[in-house]
Length: 216
Length: 262
Image (cartoon, rainbow over all chains, first blue to last red; front, side, top):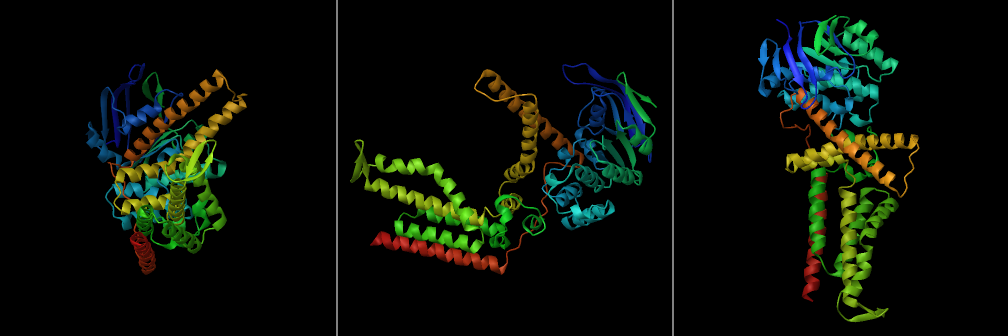
């Protein structure tokens, strides 16, 4: 059973040309896939459709064997899919790192003590304990990126979706991120324009051409 | 969680960075006592009593460990907002003539009223600066939440704290890019139009960012409620402080009533 299954997705923003016409893809457990395509081809749109942030005009999204039709279905799937946004400032909205990492677990119904335990566990796993009590908007770009990954891993997702994770990273943080990601056992769907990074993390995947997905 | 923002380790900015002694007291108690203080002082009208209220504020300042000069300078900044009203008050209030200027009569009653307002405003603002102004904004948000302020308002405040810097940076980036392309503001349509575009662009970006933030929150299971990780403790020192300040306020009220009777 694929973790994520998209069948024949059609989508267009109101008043504009269609973005997707019959896109289909599957992500199997443990698989790492990359999603490539030129700027503006609709990669981010596709990711939003997967997460239920946009509703396709037709087609079907199935996550973990269950069809996702209404917002309530996506509530359940979002707990199991971790999404790392392109701009870390969009994702880190709490004043301190610890609060931001705890946000997801608290939403999952964990108690404060459990959430704090998760915060400590995830941060020490990513070697970020020194950032625990820092103010999020004062972190450097690289630190923000690693912390966004921590906020998502705190929810213990089965699938990770990464949108341009290497954007504007220096070589050190780039190496850290590559090391962390290759060490994870989650299935990964990666959007990246960086061929070297793709080759390391997810050499195979889909290419978005002519509003459809082609296996590469 | 907020102890990290007021403690020694966090990089602080502005007023809260001066690490006042009063920051060790429970923020909830400080907010409640400040509100009480403001209500009491505003309701006083005897000039002697008001002067002692200002004295009380000054002793709070001395206790708080804030640098007195900078704090008083900030207080004076607030005065610049009301200075014109204070200067005009003697001329606009009818009463016994004090002197006349270009045919305008200044009244004693107006002068006393102006002094009363100046004393009240300064006493209250000084207390607010020492008790509440020393709080990190985030601590204040959490304390307001603990005091049962509507959740939405608290979240609005927290988001403002978090994103005001992002917006400022965005503004600065746009301004820099304008400057680098030779933009010099002047009094002409080109300048007005360019500023209009700048503000419009910031609004559009802010809206789009808010949508992305909401999307990111939804992806992490947000369903309408943010749970705050915070627990405040009311300690003995807090109760003692509240009691002493309360007693001082009671004395002020007693003096006001006493003076009104004589």
